[in-house]
Image 1 (tube, rainbow, N blue to C red):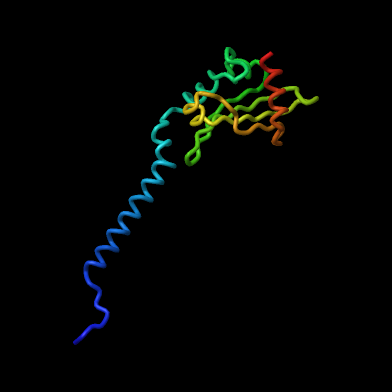
Image 2: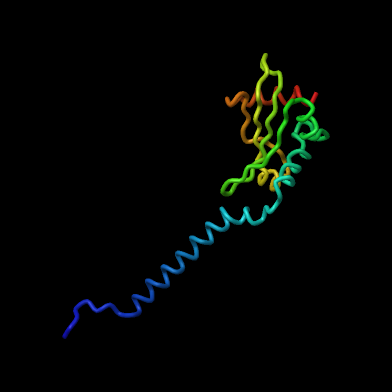
Length: 145
């Protein structure tokens, strides 16, 4: 019996080798850009919160965020949120601002803070509505004066 289109073993080996290299490159990419930071930042929730509380904003380098936030806001609450590839510290508190009492929520990226050594919130809301950056800066100026 004769078989047409007989595939030589060397072509099969080339395909297997190429597929293996492709998988290794893809897994390396996933590790270095997604999982690596998860393994490097193995802090407890309280340690993450303390990183943010003991940090300062650029314009107020001698004033710790935690102390001033806890003094300015009532019902203040700090907690850590972990999602795939993200570690955020969330601050919630009530304050009289914008002409009324509002519930503020400010989210900080812990991984970015550790890497850059600077603190910058990634989201800020008042009564579950995002506020403008300029309004946030006015709030910060009011808190730290």
